[in-house]
Length: 347
Image 1: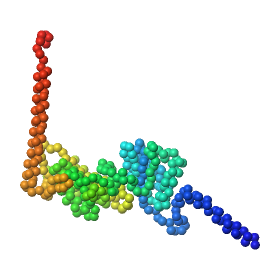
Image 2: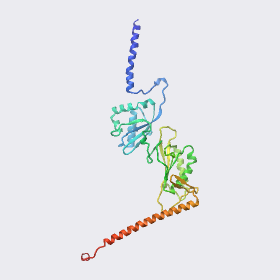
Image 3: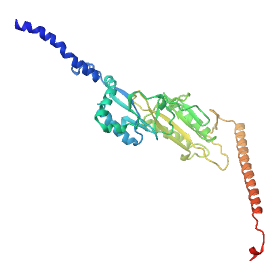
Image 4: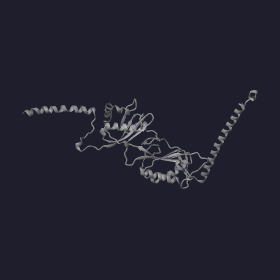
């Protein structure tokens, strides 16, 4: 009978053991919704974290090192090559690729606050007067800006509109093996015959960055293709007349082949006399505002030459007029400053 009398007491005491666990779950969000022994644990998925308000006083390598240590304290180990730090004179931020569970991301804010309280050195990572921003995604839209001179572009960034010096091509599919060589001939020739410019492959006509799948082997093929085509141009196009770069594209989606934007820039140079370039196929192209004309006919080429020589003649006439005015001004100054002969000057 004694055990029967105690059993109600144990049943009444069992619920009393639950509140401490509930209180603990409110302070720290649970990391795993399923026990490891259940065999139903969800595999970690890849996420891109945006980390804002980094201290711009540190260099990119230092920020990457501090950020890696911080993420390790948050139980988010990450390799150095998966950390992309963008540093400007007054601001810095980073994009980090991590493989973790969704529950771990949900508890990032609580983990971050705890780590900042326990480790004072982590405060050096944050810009003065700011709070570290850590969350999933590409960050606020204010950071999706034009960064043509930077080492990377963000997918969805706006690069502006097409102009006389800028041409966008979406690419994709079999573009690099089929259409790219024709566009190299067309646009490089047009830029050489105008004021220079850049061809961007991997950008929508609207100016939004998408990127194309481009491996290291594809880069080598593109370099060889561009070099072989431009060697056939007349007059000869020297290597310093153009620049070919492959800009990495940062995206939240993961692909086996990295996304990149191919930028082929043609540098316009001052020439002693007007030169008209033709492609290796003997075609001539000209660049207008946002469009390309060609192949040109004989009459169009003659008209281009006439306009070029007329423009050069006008420039020379302007220089002659400026020099003539300067000559007259100097002559007037010499006449006004002519010394008057006197006894002192003779002696």
